[in-house]
Each structure stands twice: as C-alpha cells, then as structure tokens.
Image (cartoon, rainbow, N blue to C red; front, side, top):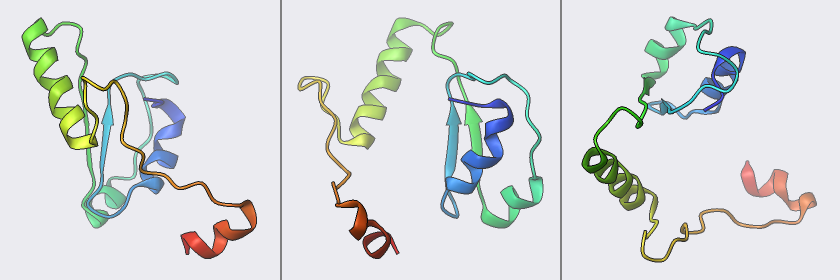
Length: 95
C-alpha cells in the first residue's frame, strides 16, 4: 500500500516466488523498479482498486482474502500468525 520510493524495500521483504499486491499508493504511483530482481526471484507485482467494481465483485474479493488469511468475517478477527518474543531472543528465533 505504500508505493512510490518505498517499492524497492517492499520487494526486498518478499520471499522468492512472492507477490506484492497494491490496493493503494500512499507515497505516489510512480517508482523505479529492478526488473532483473523480479525475473530472477520470480516475483509477481499486481494491483487493483475496489471502488469502481460492483458490490458483488468486492464482496467476492473480500471473502477470498478472508479465506486465504484465515480470517472469518463472522468473527471479525484475524487469525494470529505472529509470536511475541522477548527482544533478546529475536535474533536466534528468526535466523
């Protein structure tokens, strides 16, 4: 969602075969991009805006995102995927 000059940092956060999906651009719609990195790491960059789409289409997209993220729209909560760690353990646990 950041876009602009932040895109290279967003790409570095992706795993190989990762996807970067834009639904907004808070730092602008233009960026400089290393196409070699996209190809070498098999990255996918895509984007969409929901506003001009019909309500039914937006609902389908929302349901798909909820299903893939483990979120239940009935519960209104996201599944917890992160673990709290004491700061001194972080380097060992994330290596």
